Image (cartoon, rainbow, N blue to C red):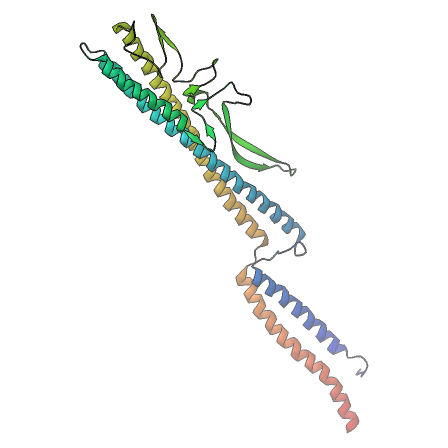
Length: 305
């Protein structure tokens, strides 16, 4: 039945064209933003997951910065310990030279004194970001020999979050401790017969330093060399662990980014193909609507005839 009041064909064609136009708008938005889920209304579940994952990735970026700071602190301490090790090893060599008959111990002591001053300089200079792990005062309030480096940001299945740290015990890295009740590797007291000394103040020209005492000094200095070697090794291990964790955090951030992309990113090839198909549908819809609207003109021509 033909009617001049209700054009059913035109209504159907118009509705179909409107749906096609809406789909074109959605596809064009995806192409322009590169996202299939750009806001919560697109897909609330995916949008929520992606937003949380982006927040976690941002937190991991901060963790990576903290690891970099921690690695720098360990590196400074390691460099200081390694330098101190070389100096103490040189002091041991001077002591061995002093044990030879007929040598001028005063000249050797002058060289040792300069090396001792260098040890003090090394320990005081090994500072990064206000922290010095080699020259400390363990007697001050709040002092802790355990240094913590933020290593990871974790989210549990219930949504709760937590931080994990890499803890470094600096007890064996301390060269000098200003606390009267504690000692570092270089201010630990040694007593040989009537002579008391530390690595930092031993004097081979002092009274009571005979060949036997000198031999004991060499033994004590050698023990300090071994202790410094162990300390440097421990710091090297901590540094390697921090670097490995930093690499892992970077890889984890990349994995999270890929996961977010799979949830919300648009497939540009698919969207481009869909847009071309929709544009064809749009053209056919316009023609269909034009034909439907032409039915009224056909009825008018009947009356004119």
